[in-house]
Image (cartoon, rainbow, N blue to C red):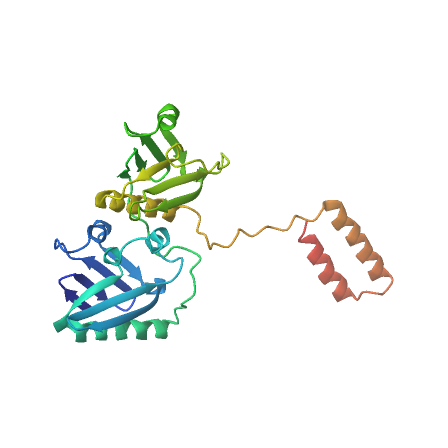
Length: 283
């Protein structure tokens, strides 16, 4: 087993799994701590790199597209400090970090793990239930249903619409944009059962406004990840469509035609028997 133990956290690798445990120090990003321990299968990893610096360095894990619901949900919207696949390396641990990266790269090569996208999530989403407080409401998710309850700051249209109950099976899309600068963020759920009107966020009962408080961003990131992990994978192959069964009368007609060809000597006994059995299996 290979291990990197630094003030920022601990990464271990046993040849099959990379275990990531963030430190509990106050300097560690709160979202990383909220995510807790992550167990990353080797098959979910596209690559790893160690970047040396003057006072240490960075160990970075690159995940395969579609393998991790957290990466899928956040999509580069969060600051680097919130990235659970980024470990700050102390100067005296640089050699260990380089060795760790070499071991993971060697395993990726030996196992033939592709760098391309995965058509299924290889890591689970956060456990539920989860609750996220937004500026104008509260969102909860229990694994099956999303509940949105407007608060006192919600627009009159949302107050009039009242609490929204959205079954997971009715979710067509999740739109999450954290606040940026002076712009508020938003979290919106598009339902399959109701055509999207793209009304302003402040009027949409299936959406909440985000002011960008640190705790708000953290809880929303976890909730969105939990929802994304339980929706159909965006790269999943469509279910195979079974060919319709052969019509009974059509098969019988073809059997009669085969019999005639056999009697006329066009088909040998062996050819007739093989073709007959193939048709009978369709009945």
